[in-house]
Image (tube, rainbow, N blue to C red):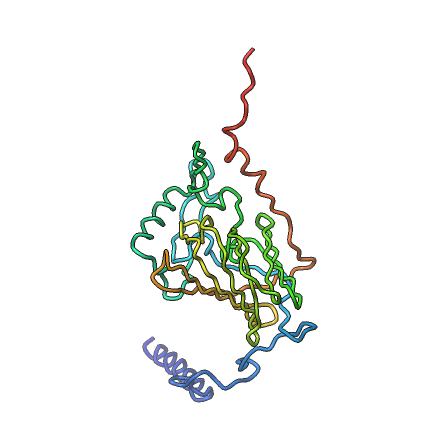
Length: 295
């Protein structure tokens, strides 16, 4: 028995040694030289104007809509009724460095947001919009949240404008590549001006209101939000998405998030309708319904 074990060990050791000698060791070496597997820089297909062609339907495969930072799986709002329906998945942070650099006073606001995420205030002074996750009420998702919601979006690329058409709530963004101006008024999706930097589409967005959130965890911003996004092809069917967030009213410094976006390649892929307004009518306006008179 001992002899068999010794022979088996020698056989495994010999195989490992052969592989070690046959395959050049990469220990201590840098990334291999550029080649088919490790291109120096991916160059995508070109549009008619010579810029990278980003046209297509894309979707993020992260759980950042639940929380931008690391998070555990959690039950839904009514597990006693819905079981696992509505439960939130676990996920890893997409924030560079792991955590969002909040000012101390802003952390208290985030905590309050999370605690009140399922509330809808319908008070007389019209401050109901200040409570609850805007997604719950089918408001426009804002930027960059629209990009990583669990819904696809379509990029329609032209030389003067780039359109981003989102499935959630029918949200639409226009990126002005020429005739760029400042935002005429604050809005949910802001005002976007774009430019090309090599292979990257860079979108600079300002002019936000302070009503949208970054996720269901209560991460938020003020009306001073400034977002710079980069869409960079990294293969025929993936983009690298990066967003730099700046808001001196809420954060101690600018910070960055990043994630891959994947092309929807199934046959006849298209943006469908998700008209969620009708789903929230009772939640939002049920208190206004007139009760029938008793006979």
